[in-house]
Amino acid sequence: MSHQAGFVSIIGKPNAGKSTLMNALVGENMSIITPKAQTTRHRILGIVNDENYQIVFSDTPGVIKPHYALHESMMHQVDGSIVDADLILLVTDIYEEYDEADVLKKLEGSLAPIAVLINKIDQSDEETVKKKVEFWQEKLKPKAVFAISALLGHNIKAIMDFVIENLPEHPAYYEKDALTDRNDRFFASEMIRAQIFKQYKKEIPYSSEVIVTAFVEGETLHRISAEIIVERDSQKNILIGQGGKMLKIVGTYARRDMEDFFQRKVFLEMFVKVIPDWRSKKNYLKKFGYE
Ligand code: GDP
Ligand code: K
Ligand code: MG
Image 1 (tube, helix red, strand yellow):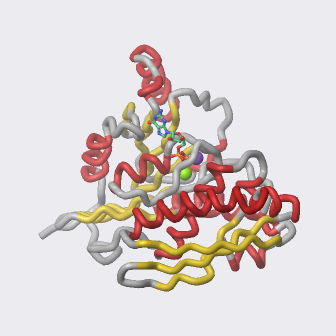
Image 2 (tube, rainbow, N blue to C red):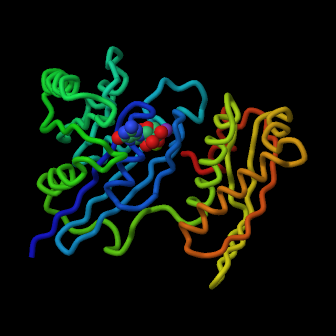
């Protein structure tokens, strides 16, 4: 019997709703979502399996101009995802002007068919949506344009049908029960990072990295230790907060998310460490899992 499989890359500017879309498509909270740009730092695979097909979605960091070695790694992962793609889902939100060509330039070298997804239509009106659809049909001549709300799940089914229709004939790339290429340590660190993005302002989220240093699995309880890395002593103080108040909030919410995700009780301990300019240092980036 025939089998389809392929790589479907989710590409776009920061905050367009790429991670929200990925989670809606795979039906799992695989990618962390926050209102802040640059939340997603890695390419993350979300795999949808059926008897007759395997769809390998890639969530990716939003396209930006790199300022640090960290950003360079993030953009490298976007490029890799475009090279691998059998199909590209370009996510734009209804407000985006597309007066600059960063994202479109990245797509120029690719032969993969593109669908443009105009997201957040729940915040718009019919007339605006219609104009945007026409704009994209004219601008890119894509294979399809969908007006969607990733948040409300509007038109997700139509995207899935489109993806399956355009998936190449190919054997499965991953085990048919695989959901992702990432391990539990990665998801644990992401859940802490999500809380850092949600609880702090200004540069703290962008200067922080989270490393899970120990993960002891148990039948009823996981014991997880993590280091939060920041760039300066002043950031360490803000992160911890008076009498440890802020770090406690981060820990409480992150633990709750982990307990939901792992379906276990979680014991979480966290330590804050300063590594000056880690974002610009290739050796640390490599250690933290950025290629
Ligand atoms: P990414 O940076 O492209 O991965 O975007 P995220 O998925 O992290 O979403 C960025 C913000 O937009 C979050 O606050 C989401 O809740 C919000 N968002 C995503 N999709 C929608 C949508 O369809 N409608 C609305 N109103 N908000 C959305
Ligand atoms: K975001
Ligand atoms: Mg994201």
